[in-house]
Length: 313
Image 1: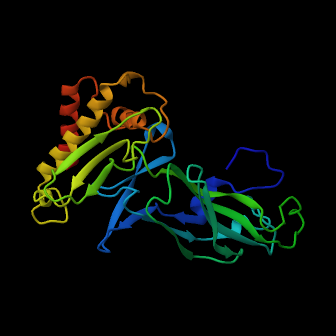
Image 2: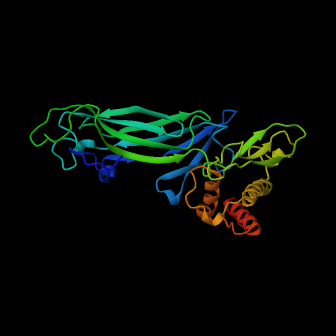
Image 3: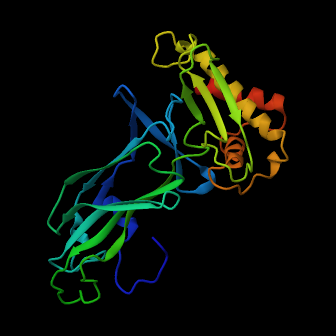
């Protein structure tokens, strides 16, 4: 919510815990077989309230799968938001509403939907906020916000004349986060093919401008896994023959090839401070600053990425 001077009382986020119980967001996706797999949100310490979608199995990518997002919310006791209470923002007899909004400038899409409405004497209302997205439906950074607004006007009593009393007015935000759907943090650029007689994996690197080319665009960067190769079973987590060490080695080798292909250009790894969000250069910045991978030399990078994979698993 923008920092503006309001002519009427608005919601004070400092009282959230007293009135609302907000659980963390939960994410998951459904694969081709209809199985549900959990995803997690990983924060980017360099960008405040921005998160990336992380799949512990290294399978999910927004071009191949959609995802579901949900959040549990409980309205415990909203009475202090009404009438003469110190933190009141609505007249006696009015109704407040909660809405869920998501927006993506990159995708040129925005949606707001009502979740519930409540009055002063309503208590212990349990809600589940959820939304589902199809594969490739969203790109770039998407904001998810829970809004508090005036659903219907009340009857102002003495001392309540300053409260906004026009239905539809936005009174504040209960929660707001940004999620980077594609690019460096959401997932390594892994794609799949089915080619009989083909190699188990290969890498495509075709940078035109690493500072702006998307890291998740298969035409720019891609790690392509061949599901028809007889050795695929050793890197498929769903297969009983899965071999963690082999899977680590494939991914480490593939990422190393991408990084060294970029190193061969004029890109300076020590000056990647403000690349375009989701770009190839931004991915390298993420490797360096967030994951703390050593990019100083090819040998140092190969060592640090393998240590990271071993530690993760």
